[in-house]
Image 1 (spheres, rainbow, N blue to C red):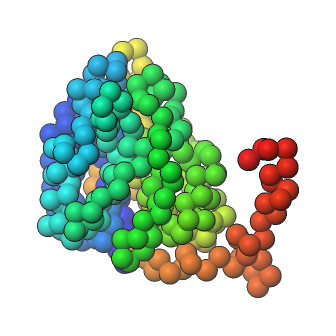
Image 2 (image 1 turned 30 degrees about the vertical axis):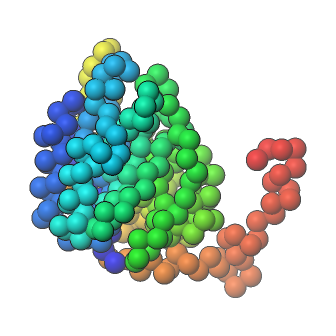
Length: 266
Ligand code: ACM
């Protein structure tokens, strides 16, 4: 199975241009599963909820979903991408999985980062694993990485590959995802963005270095800090089904849950 990511620098507010750039890049690639960054079509630094509302779309009725579903069908690729989702009066920072058949799933970011708390509603959906045929995949978004519970729950629910759209500004996550993969025996695709946004008194630079990591923590492919394009690598998702760490250690069965739950700390 060939998996990978698209890394780019979206232009703030120029949704159709961002979408077209991603589509033409992905059209030139061959893959079974590709992940795009968080908010890949809009950019990140919103000034107000009003501005965000104008950029957000409903799923599956919106323009972005419809273009990405067409791409998934014509390229026979499963796509995971981050976008601002509107539902009634709420806006979520969401990740969408769309398959070549047009089936789709939505994950809404549970752990909002910094200014996002002013713009988005926190996610209200369970963490789930979805069967795409070649593998079971789970979704999490950017800052969710700092809560190890997220990757753990996805892995416990059967996710073999975590799809991780991101807009990372700190340099820690790429290394932390190596640990998430080792401790859960899973693959992870982190699709980060690059570039700088300077707006409303804030300046954010995004760290790139999108990567695919395997269950032993090997970085199978990694982009640079300013490269744009699609990267892919062949993987065997069945490697994520073996949770034995040694002949006497099992990543899930050796957990001492009764001790973790003492004092209601979970
Ligand atoms: C982030 O969650 N976008 C840092």
